[in-house]
Image (cartoon, rainbow, N blue to C red; front, side, top):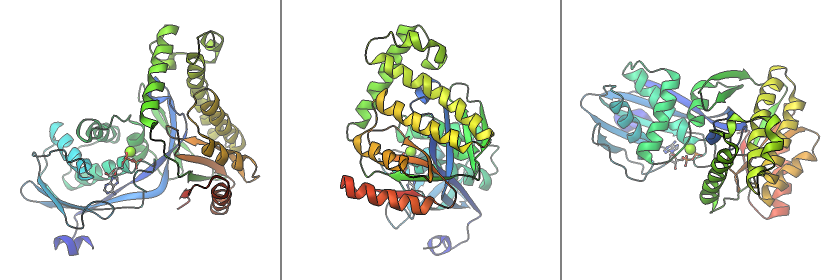
Length: 362
Ligand code: ADP
Ligand code: MG
């Protein structure tokens, strides 16, 4: 149903935000380090009309019932459903002192939900942009990213970092966001037109992923404590001999973080000089480090990366996201993305018995 069919009027504003994929810089965020995400072509679109009074009526084409959910601004309460992302946004805007009225809202997205491409941040930022435009709120980009994160942390109840919201607020098509997660300093780096991205979901999700993630975080904190630094971010490759004197598994965990931060810096230099070969090698090195030092890869993901290594069109491939399943991001020669992705997906499906999905290209 169109907005007009739903609400009997035309939308006042139409706003959108993209999903994202992290190119390199994995498990560095909670160590105060660097990340390098980029946006994907899929987007979430929010159409919004103002309503007098505080009533909000909202429908998502992608989730929930085919009838609008209704509530009054100021009475938000957590339901454990998709609507919490919207309620979280009106709640956080009100808390931050932005006066809001009601709204009729229609949401439609091409970002796959819950696949690690950050449909949640795309939704938050698209909603924030729609409210900003409809109510002429003086909101800046980084402020919107932080408000989106706060809504997700404090209202939805998901303890996420700020990378996703920063990526989808600040990076445009063909750009990566180089973000220092401690200082929040950032720059936008253009992606070379001499490469194309693939994101292939392995079809494997690990039900211990949350527990293992907590363990890794705790191991990093312990390693930092033993090395006498506030965060592993405070070390660099010169410190590796000292790092490797730590007992198992702390030395390897810290080595991943220290070398991964260095790889993000090297990846930015590779992007700036348009060296896609070097960038691809950094992808492979990052993957090896996640597999051997950080122990967050699994056999199926390693199989995808090994299939990629055997293809001349592929510059580099690595596990993206927290690990224990999930997706592989690959850098390939331009114009080959669709063909290479379906070839690797077919080989992988035949050898693993799993059901992969090509998320990018669309
Ligand atoms: P990811 O961000 O990796 O896609 P999350 O679990 O963080 O996964 O967020 C997915 C959740 O966000 C969905 O289950 C849903 O509640 C909400 N969501 C995201 N996009 C939409 C949408 N277009 N319509 C409704 N809900 C959405
Ligand atoms: Mg998310």
